[in-house]
Every structure is written in C-alpha cells, then in structure tokens.
Length: 402
Ligand SMILES: Nc1nc2c(ncn2[C@@H]2O[C@H](COP(=O)(O)OP(=O)(O)OP(=O)(O)O)[C@@H](O)[C@H]2O)c(=O)[nH]1
Ligand SMILES: [Mg+2]
Image (cartoon, rainbow, N blue to C red; front, side, top):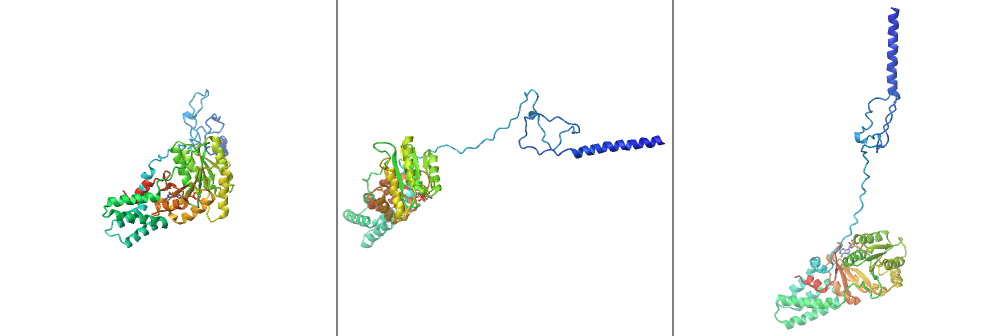
C-alpha cells in the first residue's frame, strides 16, 4: 500500500515538473521580433536552441527555397531589385515651324476681329453712302482702336475711291478696303526680329513692358521660335522681383533646351542681364533673350532701373532688339506706355499680345504711328506656339474675312 502511494506521489511530482517546464518554457520564449521590412536574406539560418520549437513560429515569415542560402552559395539568391527611380522626362520639345503661323492662327484673330472688317464691308455695300453711314464707318474704326488720325485718313481715302468707282460690286469693295487697310497697317516696315548681329555673337534681345502684358510668355515663345530655326538660346531672368518669375522663364527654357541665367531674388536686374550675356558669349550661344520685370511706366524709379539694365548690357555690345510687349486688350493705354518706354530704352519692335481675346486689333495701326516702330510679333493665345511673326496681309485678310 505504501509502495502504491509512493508511486502515485512520484508520478504526480514528475508530471507536475514536466507540465511546469513546458509552461515555463512557453513563458520565457521571447516574442518574435517584428518582421524586418527587408529580410536579411544573406544571413545564415539561426542555429536552433534547446527549447525552440521544431516548427518555424507562425509569426516569422516563411522563407522559400530560393531564399535559403546553401552552404556553397550556389543557390539562386533573390536579390531585391533596386527601386526604379522615375526621372522627369528630359525630352526636349520640337516647336512648330514659324513660317505661316499667322495664317494658321488666323481663325483666332478673325473670331474677335471680324466685326471690324465685316462691319465695314456691310456699311460700304449700302446703296446710298450718306454722311451718317460714313460716321458709322468712322465709329467702327475708332472702336477698334485704330486711332483718330488714321481713321480720318482712311475714311477720306475710301470716300474718294468709292466716288470714282461709281457702282460697286462686293468684290471691288473688298479689294478696295483690303488695299486701304494694308496701307494703314504698313507693308514697308522691316518686321524681322533682329537676332543676328553683324559682328560678334550673341544677338541680344531685351523684352520690356508693364505688368502682366505677357513679357515672360513672349520671351519663352520667342526662344522656341529661335530654337525651331536652329539657333542656340540663353535666357536671362532679369525679373528679380519674384523667384517665381525666374522659375517661369526657366521652365520655358527647359522645354526647348535653352539655358537660363538667374540671380538672387531681389538682386540687381542689371547684373543678371550682364551675366546672361557674358555666359551666352562664353557658351557660344546665338541669341540671349533678357526678360525684365513688369514695371508701371508711371514709376520713375523703375523706369530708371530699366534704363540702367540696358546701359549695363551695352557694356558687352549694343542690343539688337528691344521689344515692347503691349497687351492689345488695354487699348489706348498701350499708347501711353509705348511713349514712356520708348523714351527710356529705344524700342525697336512691338509685340502685341492677347490679340486672340479682343476686337481692338486697330491698335496695331495706332501704336506703329505713335512710335514709328513696327509690330513684329503678335500673341494669339497662351499655347507655347501661339506667337506669330506679324504679316500685314494675313492680318488684314483676317480682318475682312476670306
Ligand atoms: N490669351 C492670351 N494670353 C496671353 C498671351 N500672352 C500672354 N498671355 C497670358 O498673360 C498672362 C501673363 O503673362 P506673363 O508672360 O506672365 O506676363 P508678364 O508680362 O511676364 O508679367 P509680369 O512679369 O508679372 O509683369 C499669362 O497668363 C499668359 O498666359 C496671348 O497672346 N494671348
Ligand atoms: Mg514676367
């Protein structure tokens, strides 16, 4: 009996010890570390220790056969591919050719300008051209911002010629109006943008105007035109008022592969312009285009600053072009601006922007009269290739319709 009791006690003690061990070992086992983000596939498998369970704990990621390094290292090792870094596209755009752009963009012009030509043709076609009709013709021209003097000249000539003509067919009238408008717009001006100096490269072009007329856009579009014609271009970000202005210009440049020279924000615009030409020279560029900050023609300090930019650049070489950018939608105010800018920095050409959004195309005539300087380029939209060389014939055709 004693033996039986002893055996039971021993059995209980042994079982208890075994149970305690098991429970104890479970308690002592540390939690598996969180799975590493990139498993160290090169580390050899850990040696098993006493008390470890035979099976891989469920929390650990199971390794596939490929991941297990064999002793001789001959097994294929899955090396993680380095992440592919998406580089921004460096593809350089090829701008549209410049020839015939105004013809292509004529629809933009005629949409807003047609009122002028169509209105004139309708009035001229009236059976009886009385004083009132001639006054209406005058009004149309004045509304289109042709200006008082040119309007009177045109009406006088039209009256004369219509009288001589006697009976008029619509075709005759159209031809007559076309001729007279062409005379007014002027076919004798040299409208080429001068970028090829006679002596040494690079050609230097400076772009000026009041705020928001489209200077930077025009500089960018012009860079595209030049690049399309096979010229190398350096851009000078002489608008140092805002860092964003230089960024804006640089973006235009990057699209066609033109290098942009910029200076510190609020730095001296004259020194940026100077450096741009200097770098253009060193790089052997064909043309340097200098974008300037918008400035009100009424602020003397800012106008003086512009004069200084020009003088400093001229330490390198004379400027080939000083382009005044005028917003066609501002109408007659453009004339006042033109006058003041011309005094400070001899304007050599006018860029008339936003002609796509106005019926005031007559400003072409008025501003040329005011400055005695031709409109060389017209902006017909915000698109990169919406800048066209100004061609009087295409312009007048757009006015009076096909
Ligand atoms: N519709 C139309 N918009 C134009 C044209 N040219 C420029 N713009 C727009 O006019 C706005 C002003 O253009 P910018 O080139 O920044 O003018 P900016 O003269 O450099 O302006 P500031 O540097 O601030 O003086 C932009 O939204 C252009 O897209 C054009 O011919 N037609
Ligand atoms: Mg600008």
